[in-house]
Image 1 (tube, one colour):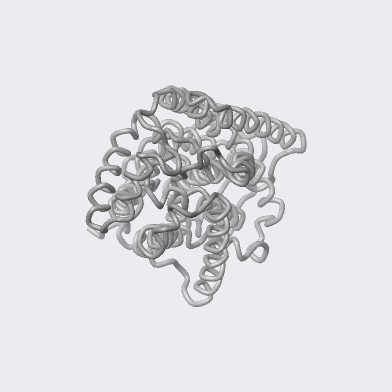
Image 2 (cartoon, rainbow, N blue to C red):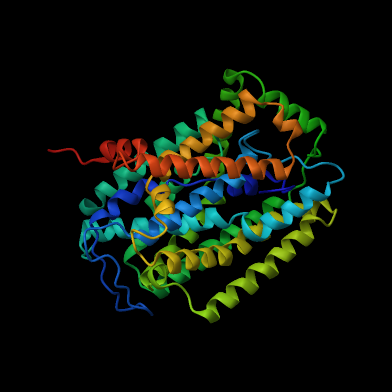
Amino acid sequence: MTTNHSTPLPQALHSQSTGIGTEADLQASIQTKPKADSSYETSAATTRTRFANLDAIRGLALLGIFFLNILMMSNSLMGYAPHSPEIASDIAVGVFTSIFLEGRFISLFSMLFGVALLLQVQKVTQHNELTPLAATPIKQRLKWLILFGFAHGCLLFPGDILLTYGVCGLLIYRYTQLSVDELYTKAKKFIAIGFVVFLLMTLIPLDEEWHRGSELFNQELAIWTGSYVYQLVHQVGLTFLMIFMLPISTLWFCSGLMVLGMALWKQGYFEQGFSQTQLIKFAAASLLLSALDCGLRYSGNATLVQASAAIMTISAIPMAAIYLHIIVKLCQNNPLKLQWLQNVGKLSLSLYILQSIIGVSLLRFIFPQWQSEFNLIDYFLLALGVAAAQLVIANVYVRVFKQGPLEKLLRLLAKPKLQ
């Protein structure tokens, strides 16, 4: 849940959700084999069942990202407008989210998307060479995901990530057959490039102040409480802006996280979790970077405040790994454990779009006054309520249907045509 990170592109990265759940049904019949170059041998999924750990992790990530997305759904770009001066409750919630929420779940989702892509390639190739013909169904699915994302961005929420994930997937699916060391090298390179670009972009000074009651806030408020047609024009423009910025920044960082997920899968971390030593290092790194993020954010210096957004993107990665480990140990790849989270993960694409419908409807049309009245704690409680509702919806839905409506639609659209 962002406070006053006000640089547009990093804000959009914080807000983005994922269509990783759109790949979930392809895990249903995967056979994975230990890799000779892996540090840990993975014994995952030798039967025709879903990989329970991935569903549970995806479920947690989906619920978690809404706590950040809700701040963007009111105005689609600038995020939460803090008070001037900031109030104590906003600072407290801001520090909490900086440590435990902000960027953590989008990082986790990106890693999961990389894993899903790897499993798809393993399925179509049966661990043989990835030929252009074998890659056709994967590319077809990713192209449809791009179209889904474009429609979602234009019609509902320009903070969409489906389009970005589809483009990233088309670029990196060939990496699935690289060794663990090669994957780690590429992941570090891509993440470093993305971080440097984000950092440089956050140093671009804003022309206007962004806080509650400022001229810019009032201008945005007029746009996002106006008619849907008026909002639609702005949403289309913002979506094209995100497409333009994609190869400059977001593409690198998201691709790096996806490749990192592939490497972690090949080493068995999605099945076994991390060692105690690794977890201590992750916790120390995340807390140290989060402290730096908070220090910059509340420094009172506009340049440092904006730079804190870039620090956040890095601090999120080790904390995401900790969340991964916790779910792995609790779920133990057992379809009967954390079933309530697994059911959310199975419907992640449908529930992701539902989040946008709920957030946009509430904040822009049903209760537009909330944009002026809500503090961070109010958004937090709203997100908590929506998360609880989605848990109920998912666990009732899967008792009747095997697939979510959008998961089924994407599968039908991407189904290879008979010649």
